[in-house]
Length: 191
Image (tube, rainbow, N blue to C red):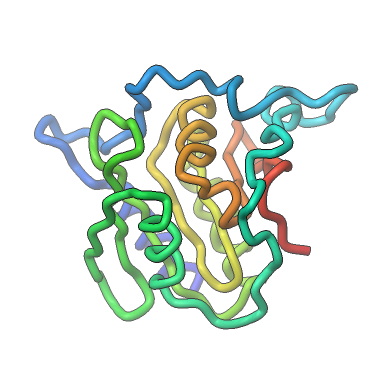
């Protein structure tokens, strides 16, 4: 399944604009990442990305208990629609859909690649591998057996998007650095 996920991730990230470049996430509503996140106190071994955390209270009122059931993309779609976002679905195959999200303060619709995997361990592992494959600026979330890959962005824009849409409260938010991935604490976590 790993090769399928990575191949699909490459295809999914290649949502091409008229000039032939992959779409990127760009926040245009004037949101400042510091309204949603902060740096942690003390030394962190991973550098700047390892120092980030979402602010306390970001997920207040959101269900934070991990689900131990097999989810379909419908769980994510319901969540996004509850956040007053417009979501359109494109189904690539039974275990892969694209959720096109508008209404979050971005310069263009955001295409999220949603992989439906067998279990939570596989979802976390596949997301980690896809983020490393796509490199710095890649980000995504995973919850239960779903792995969601977002478009490349500066970490400040991806964190604002994840905070404003509450995706950081729905799934484990992970971002790629130069040679590793980092889970940003303060939101939803699976242990």
